[in-house]
Image (cartoon, rainbow, N blue to C red; front, top):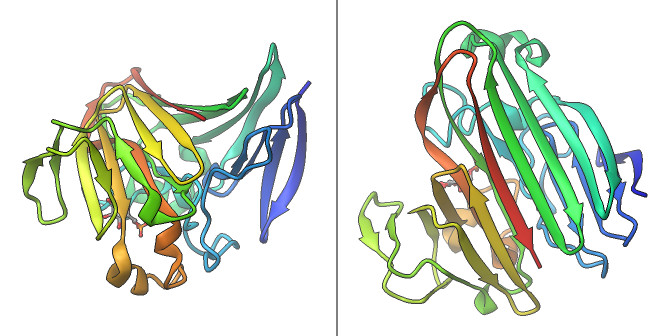
Length: 279
Ligand SMILES: O=P(O)(O)OC[C@H]1O[C@H](O)[C@H](O)[C@@H](O)[C@@H]1O
């Protein structure tokens, strides 16, 4: 049986689930933000900045920020959208047969007036995190509950704790096309991507890739999304981030299943994206 408890993470109300095998996840209601995922061996898999605000005043730097309804500045609204700075509801939890889950929901009635007015659509978001063995699944559903189509972009902006950036690589992207931060479109020739400088790349999605760190090999799978975003700020950009210690860029990479462009969702329709991380 899974054990679900209310807790606090910094000053934020959070929910913690512990599976029968000891695997554990902690999610703050602010942003439905996964802040910690520990496999049954007790090892933390996610990175959270030591300098991040944890009081709801600003988005959290680390864990899994939920990006909706726009990616970065690719849309008319708030950078990376309002979902990561909104307070979600815990809408379900439980577990059986080795699967334990927490589910969070957000709709237009949960938004403060400034966000609801800036993005005036009827919607329902559902985000379910499921622990099973050494894997974590995230299922993200966007429903259009209104009478008109709306367009949206989305990402699960996952920060992995890699221990040492110099010993980290990503495989599974060879021959894939990507766009870099200079907006050049290129094809990756090397079998593995290493982090010797800043990387901010949008790859066309592949069903799976592998994150290799000094201590672990993680298999990442996605369905329903259309890109993988790979980001590490490098030394200079990291120094400019006030919510990240100067040397912390050496401890994480972000690999994000994403739907970068604003694509329409018809009235009454829904979209689902799935992300699975296996150790
Ligand atoms: O600082 P944030 O708003 O959280 O954005 C952090 C990063 O998110 C994504 O990975 C983008 O590709 C980057 O360009 C951006 O710098």
